[in-house]
Length: 101
Image (cartoon, rainbow, N blue to C red; front, side, top):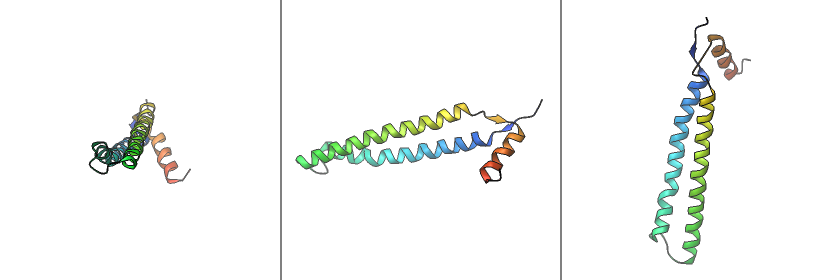
């Protein structure tokens, strides 16, 4: 029986998931506060402000949707990737990542 080692692809995907989660959270927060300010009428008022506020809300909604899709894509790839692989598979993956294959 061949010993297994940590799959470097799985490890990279875990790091990617962490970076994606932080980046998406930062991006989502970036529009949450302005959207709330426009909805409260704190930032600006009047017809143009309402139209702009709707635009900000739409972009915020779309950003949240896309962030969820990115998270789901990374999570799906993690679920399809084994945590462990053979030492040869790990070496081949690392060589491929370096462009040596």
